[in-house]
Image 1 (cartoon, rainbow, N blue to C red):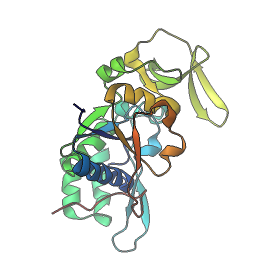
Image 2 (image 1 turned 180 degrees about the horizontal axis):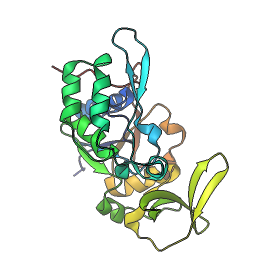
Image 3 (image 1 turned 90 degrees about the vertical axis):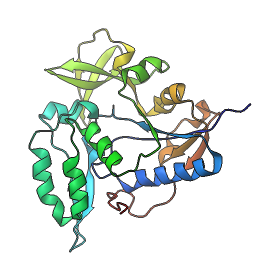
Length: 258
């Protein structure tokens, strides 16, 4: 007796209004599910620390000019190095951002934005996606979840969430040291300390195998360039499917069903 398909796609938090390429992944996964059955798993990689991931690109409703909106964070250390699930949003960010939104989206979009409540960037994005009804019927698994991390396989390239100057930062483990990349060829080396699997998240080259060791998917919907770096030979049991093509893929998705 064969097991039902598990159709998976992965994505970092990608803007408080999600980027259109995420919607394309969801649509592709739903199309596969309609054909094959099974369940859809959204691997939400909220352990990533790059603040550029949450840029939200919106077009001005009158001029069509693109604007880039993003979260602000409580301090520079958080912005640069804390994982997205620990990047705290200042209390006034939501109200200030809501004042800008009438230039870019309709009233109902603003209402959803204002109804969303979360203290960090990853939670805020996820709640917005839920309120936009993009995640109905999907199972969400988060790379920050300690139980997920405990269950995942060991990997040779990884980051570790460690304390530094009063914050938790995501440091690369390399040559028995923790390193923060300042840009270019500049790194900050932190003293090594004991750590557990609950603190570990994968690097780009080990993310697929790490995820698959828990999710056990049969099909994986990849982004337009994702298969260029995925080590697909490590997971021959997965059928890889490229996401559907969508125009203006990096822009925000604001086409809310009535």
